[in-house]
Amino acid sequence: MRPPKDRQTRLKEVGVYAGAALFLSIIGPFNATPGFPGWAIFVYWFALILLGSLAAEVAGRWLDRTFPALPLPLNLALLSVAAAIVVTCALLAFETFVMSRRMPLGYAPRIFGLVWVISAAMTAVGYMAEKSIAAQPPADAPEGAGPVETFLARLPLKFRQAELHAVSSEDHYLRVHTSLGEELILMRLADAVRELEGGGGLQVHRSWWVAKAAVRDVKRQGGKVFLVLASGKEAPVSRTFMAEAKAAGLA
Image 1: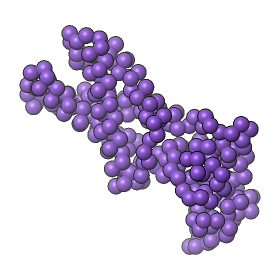
Image 2 (image 1 turned 90 degrees about the horizontal axis):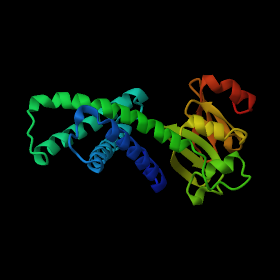
Image 3 (image 1 turned 135 degrees about the vertical axis):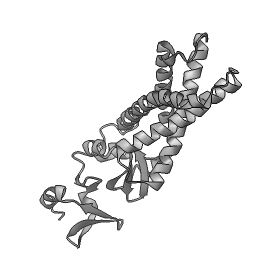
């Protein structure tokens, strides 16, 4: 599941949406706001973008629970469709109740198509912005801290003195396994692996990085290899990373 986003992340996202709204206000696509003053045009697009992003976030949480292994391209496509449906309904309501212009229902598919074009672009922009925000190093990492300490600075304060056991990927998020429990953070595993380089661990699976000091046993079952961590969690070792695991004495 997606963890709730912190205030700083939310503010950065709103800044991205405001920039997109300003861009749309300037280019005026589809002649959607004829005769509106500049401030009203910006508010119009900003409100629609926020509504669409909220719809996409709700849809994303549902998809994470219902289809956790959904491929990323299909996931993003479905999010853009969900956002476009909600925004289209909002536009029809706006035209009917605010502008007093009742549109024929037969015109709705065309409106949806026009909205979806912008929705797909915004979904892509939002995804890239989210990854960019998540990949930034923590601002409060201790001066001169090593890779593990820097990485743990991304977690709530109670985890800062914990021992890092492993990091596993869950959709767009990472589950950080420590001696004091687990925590979800918004980050790609590839970024985490780069940040943890030289931190006494290695990637053993496309979805797992483990700290060598946290491995307590090696379990083999049905031709598969698992590393048993200090917490009792089992991290799978894939064939792709088997040579590195054996070189590290873990398999």
